Amino acid sequence: MGTARNVAVLVYEQVDALDVTGPFDVFAVASDWGKDFRVYTVALESSEPIRTISGLTIKPDFSSADCPAPDILIVPGGWGARREMHNEKLTRWIGDTSRRAAYTLSVCTGALLLAKAGLLEGLRATTNRRAMDLLREAAPPSATLLEDVRYVDNGRLIASAGVTAGIDAALYLVAKLHGEERALDTASRLEHDWRREPADDQSGAPAEAASAAAVHAAEAQAPLASAVSAPAIRRATPDDADGIRSLLVEAAHWIRGAHGFWQWREEHFASEIVEAFVRDNEVFVAFIGDELVGCFSVHWTYEEIWGERWHDDAGYVHRLCVSRSRKGEGIGRVLLRYAEAYIRERGKNWLRLDCMADNPSLNAYYESLGFAILGRFDAGFWSANLYEREIGQ
Image (cartoon, rainbow, N blue to C red):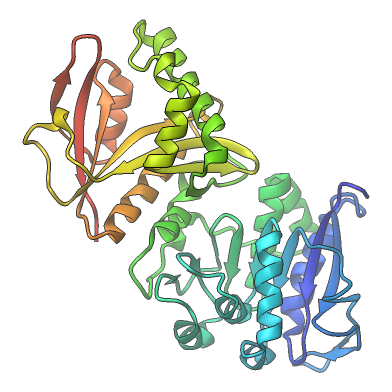
């Protein structure tokens, strides 16, 4: 029991019963007799019974003041969400709790509460198809709203469509944490036909232009077909410098071992150099759980190696690196799509990068992603092919 994740399911007056009980049962059944999940209900101010839309009475296990700290927060919807989205005390608690939790899952109009809690900035979201207009009004301009999807994954935050879609999203989160076999077994026990819609089918029709975080969420799942979790990407901090240095040194040694030359040298990544790199540039890191799996930076200045072969309205992706232990999981593609959206948000129309020229497979990879080669730069002891790709609108 000591290792079980706490799963808190929020309840309030006029919540939808199935929004609550669907995900509750998924985690309860998937818990391996309480070993992996401890599931409980929580109300804002008291543990007095609440009444759902359908008239079912639920007595909360805890109030917000005394509930165990959730590792997973479930925010269901219902007609009551239309009222509770204006309850500042509740939305503040949701915001604070979500930021401390490892995962947050909204069901149906629970997305309205997340919007009012300030949790949808730069993310994708969905809700019950009958409430999309309400979510458009409540969500920030940076959010991307998708229709006709069962759920969307932003890494730490998952949003599902209406009612039974919450069961599908909960099973998806079980799969992220304990593997697809556990999720399939749980669905079987519930006699539920799990709709696992592939990410490529979740593209939907965005209500707003995609932000960097939104595109990350859209692309993160598809190339990671064999992975349990998609990477979460954020701006690097000084605390990430050691991890970034380890990735870059690992890459330098791999290049040396695989190709027989030092394209990157270990001494180029001394601690003080990497610390300055993080401090002075726009550097991003990708994590799966607590594991640093990739990094890259975005630059806007002129680079001599490009000569005249580049567009002024471009962002330059540099030091793109993925952990060798995650080779073949598509993480590089996720990083590039995130970078592309980040560059587009800043009014640029082109993405530039370079690739070591004497690595045929890596060059073929970039060309397969639609990059056009602009030429080759030789510096004697190292060389690079120069690539550019127009950013899709």
